[in-house]
Length: 71
Image (cartoon, rainbow, N blue to C red; front, side):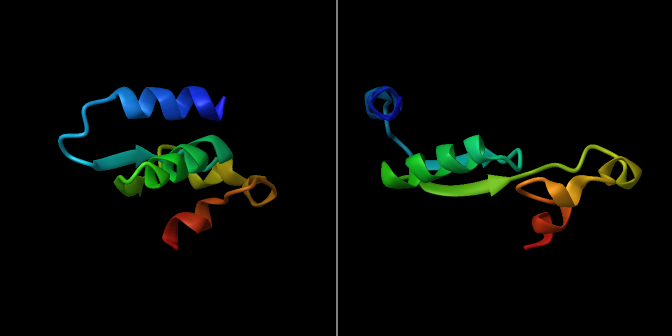
């Protein structure tokens, strides 16, 4: 899969090597950001809080918790 992603990224016109990456809090978006950095992009990650605190009861059991947004 990495070769495919690298190939697609290198095919793009890199007029401005800056990227804003939507961070879901999972591994996939983190890896996507890391691949962009490896390709020479200046990156920034962004996340949106779109749910109520009440729904985050088991959030501490995930790989990235809502508290990590504050980091």
